[in-house]
Amino acid sequence: MSSDASNESGPDLAQGVPIESLGEAGLLSGHVGNDAVLIARLGDEFFAIDAACTHYHGPLAEGLIVGDTVRCPWHHACFSLRTGEAVRAPALSPVACWSTEIRGDKVVVLHKKAPPAASVTSPAGAPQKIVIVGAGAAGFAAAERLRRLGYAGSLTMLSDDEAPPVDRPNLSKDYLAGSAPEEWLPLRDDAFFADQRIDLRLNAGVTRLHVAAQEVELADGSKVPYDRLLLATGAEAVRLPIPGMDLPHVHTLRTLADSRAIIARAANARRAVVIGASFIGLEAAASLRARGLEVHVVAPEQRPMERVLGPQMGEFVQRLHEEHDVVFHLGNTASAIDPQHVSLKAGGKLEADLVVVGVGVRPRLALAEQAGLAIDRGVVVDACLQTSAPGVFAAGDIARWPDPHSGTAIRVEHWVVAQRQGQTAAMNLIGGREKFDAVPFFWSQHYDVPINYLGHADSWDEISVDGDIAGRDCFLRYKRDGRVVAVASIYRDVESLRAEVEMERDLR
Ligand SMILES: Cc1cc2nc3c(=O)[nH]c(=O)nc-3n(C[C@H](O)[C@H](O)[C@H](O)COP(=O)(O)OP(=O)(O)OC[C@H]3O[C@@H](n4cnc5c(N)ncnc54)[C@H](O)[C@@H]3O)c2cc1C
Image 1 (cartoon, rainbow, N blue to C red):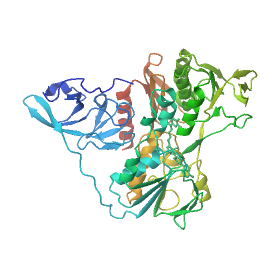
Image 2 (cartoon, helix red, strand yellow; image 1 turned 60 degrees about the vertical axis):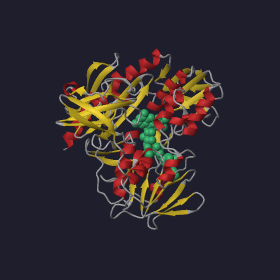
Image 3 (cartoon, rainbow, N blue to C red; image 1 turned 180 degrees about the horizontal axis):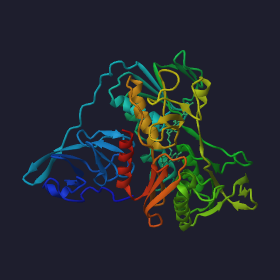
């Protein structure tokens, strides 16, 4: 991704900068003392906020002003210029606001403002007890947003995982590669849950949902009552129905425990076979290369990621991995695994002392199915993310929602979508009627190359390519019936943000 917002780079904003230096984009970053600060111009108004996104420290000065917000170029987080609030995921924490003053033809940044006082009163009509099943992207974002909205009632989050909410996308990227320490993974520390009175219960698998009685049942038989419920149970990695899948050196990758187990195994492994050329499989391949393992990838398709990104980008991704000495065995599948090998259906065996199976995920629908909620390859929700049972909402990888952009009901497996759905669900759990209409967005990272994708295209009849894919500077438009339904880009971040705004405007 592009440059980082380092603290003392750029002009000293306490000394002031000429107004005209803000340029057409209306954004300029500099510093005040040791703090990196961004100045943004909205007509005759000037705002100053921290310069780095609170998600992955993306440089907001390279983003886009939309209304009275600024969007981050890296993963499309969005901050209010007026209050610093993190309006849209993936950022969940606000940025600080600074006061400004105009002196002649200069804008000067004065001092950091105190954060706005948190609201503590429950919105009118809010229920007394909210229960969230799942502590992943959607569940956590919902809990966090509920408290930010001023919901003061009881809030319980039940997770069958042993780990608190973590930055799941990192589990196949920097953490797995060894370049991000484990301290970076938790979305919040323990103190946050205590301060916010979020009763986070780990190792608390929910086994049944009793809609009529408004309660969920845990594995130990205990029951937790609710007034409103959010189902955010996510997805689980698909396992292969082949001999050897249960061997100790064979792993899937969904949880922190999975990622830790792969890291532990990689420490003494020489050669890994990744089964599946999915996003997660290939990110894992890149991370294992960073750890010095030989990596072979086995997958049935002719080009990795072609189904989602098209042949040109698929070919680029394959070449990129080959440049890093990953060996592909495409048009092939694994038929068996033994302690030293993966056998291939087309014949032959690959040596492997570590196997990562990345052949897709399956939404975790058991609770919803057993409770009789409407299901259609996912939990069916309305535009406000309510399921067929009043008061029961669903968000994230399990939810199939009426996507107004594609005009169809879709279910996707994207971190940012899950978080934003959690945020919309939060509003509706306390009586709001907010429709979920965000443009789907995901990113994937392979070595130093980020791929950003916006929109949703199950199929297309044309892909137009601006720029040079091999040169890692490109913008692809996926068109159906002459209309752009999705875009993918590498290092064209502002164009990607503009495309998001255009898709939002098309809707209106
Ligand atoms: C390794 C990896 C890398 C990824 N990288 C990216 C990326 O780069 N970009 C991107 O857009 N997306 C990425 N994704 C996908 C993204 O993480 C998911 O789309 C997102 O986490 C979905 O959020 P969710 O809340 O629906 O589910 P999850 O985050 O999976 O959370 C589900 C939660 O529900 C709990 N749960 C399930 N069933 C029960 C039950 N019965 N009782 C109690 N608790 C239960 C689980 O333990 C978990 O806490 C990645 C996924 C993985 C695994």
